[in-house]
Structures are given as C-alpha cells and as structure tokens.
Image 1 (cartoon, rainbow, N blue to C red):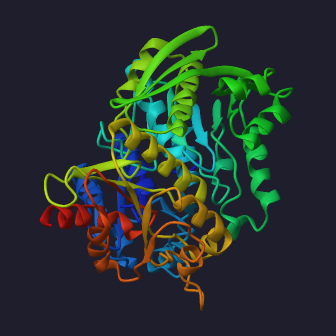
Image 2: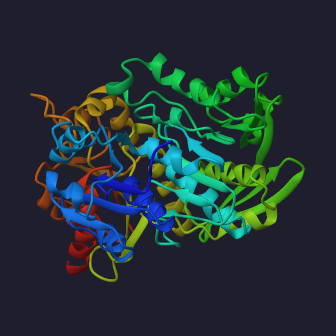
Length: 474
C-alpha cells in the first residue's frame, strides 16, 4: 500500500498526470507538482489547492511545506536526471509511475478499463458519458478532455472507475479489470516491445488479470482482438461486439451487434443490439470506427450495471474529446468560403485512415468538396517503420501538406525526414518543413466547401486555428 497523503507529480500539467491530480485533491490529499510551462490545467489545479511550480528544481519537493510521501513520474517523458527525481531518490522517497498511482486510486472499485492500439480515449470517454447518463456517476481518468464535461478526470460517487489502460509501456498490467475492453490490436510502440510477438503478448497478459466474475470485451471487426477473445473464452467470460458480418464470423462470442448504419448530415444513425435489447444512437462524431467505439461503450456500460436506453442516450449526447475530430471553425467568406477546419490526434496509419475515411463520409453527406490533410509524423521510429502505410493512408485525402517529423522524446535520425512518406504518396502533396509557413501553403490550395484536417500527435494541433485565421483573411 502506497501512502498517498502527500503526492508530488513531475509533469503535473500533462493529460494523464493532471487527471490523477484532480482525483487526489478530491480525495483530500496534499498535492504538489511541477511542469516546464504554465497552462490551463495548472491554473485549474491551483484553484483546487495544488502547489505547483513552473520549471524543475530539487526545491520543488517541498512546495507544500514538507516532503511528499511519494513522487510520481512518467518514465517515458521525464529523464532520469531530472533534479526532482534525483532529490527524491537521495531522500529515500518512493518514486512510482502514473500507472502505479492510478492502480492505487482504483483499488476497491469495479475497474472498467479500455485498452487497444487505437480508440482508447474516445471509447473511454463515451463509456463515461454513457454511464453518467445512466446515473452511475463513475470515477474516471481519461487521456483527453471531455468536451461536454470540460475535464479529464472525476472522483465519482459510484462503485465503478473507468480509465484507459495504456499498453505503450505495458503499464496496463498494473490493473485488475472487472470489465476489460480491447478495441483492436495492431503492432505499435516497437521501440519499447522490440517485437510484434511481445506487443501481442501484453494483451493476453492483460486478459489474464481480469478478476473473478469479470468480462473481456473484444471488437469482432478486428481480427487480433477477436482472436484474443477466442483464446480466452474458456477461462473468462468473453463478450464480442461488432458489425453483423463480424458477429457471423464469431458466433461463439458475439453479443453486441451493430445492425445498421446510416450516414446523415446530422451525424451517423445506427441501430445496436446488446444481448436481446435494441437501442438507436445518433453519433455526432463521424466514422464507422466511432460506431464500433459506441458499441463498446454500451457493452461496458451494461456490464457495469447501466440501463441500455439511458446509456444509448448518453452516447447520442456525446460531443467528443479534444483533438478527436475536433471542430475548430468554418470560413465565412473568401476563396475558401464554407470550408471547415478540424483537428485530430491520429498518429498511426490505421488512425489516419480512419479519420480520413470518416471525413470523406461526412463531406459526401453534406455535399462538401476536397479534403486537405495537414499531417505531422510523430516519432522517427514510427515514421521509418510505417512510411509506406502513412503514404497510403494520407492518399485518401485529395491533397496534403506534410510537415517534418515531430521527434518528441527521440533524437533526430540522420538522413530521415517526412520525404520518406511524401515520395510515396499518390495525391498532390506539399512537403513544408517550416512550421509557420503551413497556413500559407493551405491557403494556396483550399477552395470553397473544403475540409481541412490537422492530423498528428505533436505541435500540428497549434496550426488548426492559424489555418482558420489565414483562410478567413483571404
């Protein structure tokens, strides 16, 4: 048992860290932390009583007046020579990962955990909104900010705790799920796992941690997730969700079926059967992948004790998460009149393909014209590994502007740039390595009723509003 009476979080402004900080404060803990720059999450945490410093220094450990009982860090994002980490070790203060802290916070509650290579944040968010609509008031910690609630975490009054289970560093093995959802499994984070086999194995290990009486929920439209369910069906209850065609392929575990999908200007209307009950949902966020996420959320909500009709209403009211097909604005006049600007966090070829397919469906439904993808690759290792796949996915747009690679935690690789993607693309593409020139490149190719999407996990998100501003000035 970890003493959580005084907790210091390094990188407290991050999406994951700020969430657990909120829950700690709601539970009465003394919370301190630091980050490299000020931000809105830090302002919110200060208003709740957190002691926060901008910049890292060993003195920050005593921000709350005395040393913390535990220090929390992200081993991937925070270097081992960080002065606060060094000072904590010198003082004999335990240092744990965020996943360890989250595991402690979930102890004694029914853990509803959403895992998978893609779709974790959206599915977790839908599950939370659905369960709230059903009156279950779960605690939750999400890797993004719910548009409707305006927050990424909450200490609820219910007995369920809903959270993302991150596989990128195998931290999902810290948890004890009552309901474990796996949206899909596709090799990623090979810089950590080193092999595809090791990556697949972590999901089997996750399934093995499901508590007695719990359930493994798998997407039948994803072969690897469905096979995970089939391998475990004799050991644990397996509940499959997916389209009617996928359900026919896996009748032994099929439970939740998307019976119909109709794309309308207002959104995507779908009929979903959960067990013997039917529900109708109108999804505001486009894409078949989002319909599958909704099916997962309804299934998890029913398993957690929610009423299906109330859960379905919650999913219909779901307005999205920051950086998941997030609408930034419409151009009112000029050469790009009635064009729409969106931003999305997609940073893996499968995610890019999904968001551009959804964009195409939406454009066809509303009578729009071109789709312009503004893409920034994330990580040199991922770009090298999936260059051909990125080129194919991005070619689903009509035109593209591609930035250079956002290295994040990785050092540049000599001779490697985004050109290894753009040279393989089959649509008109501009390689623009100068960040501030991107809005101008977009303005040169945007026309009426186009859709412009900024795509990637790095700094490209800051360009959505700049592009919108430039198009409005034209």
